[in-house]
Length: 198
Image 1 (cartoon, helix red, strand yellow):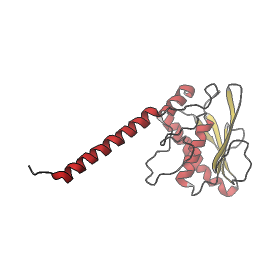
Image 2: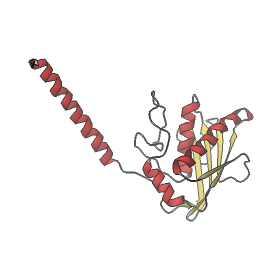
Image 3: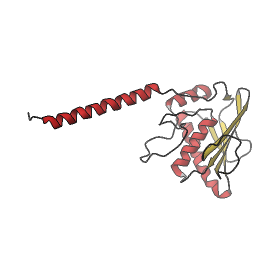
């Protein structure tokens, strides 16, 4: 067997240390992360499926509603039951989505940055309406899909989650290799199923 020499041994030890430190970091991140779940444990919708309707801020933006309809299908598929039901009519939906509103439009709900604004209202322990607007989503496409999915999470009552791979993280972004899937965590799915699965 050929003698490795000090350079090869040094590289092997260095690589081993890198793997140990990386493994410890991942383990710490997984163990230290606390799943936030719902923003208000006592509040809930009193029926499912929730009727979703979408309109463009202007008639030219109406095509953007295809993203909303697609996200409704993805969420239902991921949850394994019909949580949301897409309708073309804006007459009394549970969740009203307005696509591509300008940033300077007044919003009744919180809107601390361009992306999405929402207002989830209710009386007592039940929600009765959610309004969502997408605003200034540069580039549309994948980022718009993430923003709409995130907004639906709020409309269903989910809180922000700082975890890097959660759709509920406060700031949405598309990774260069698109490896982060746009969906709820397993914990969020479990919470939504427990609360709403008929």
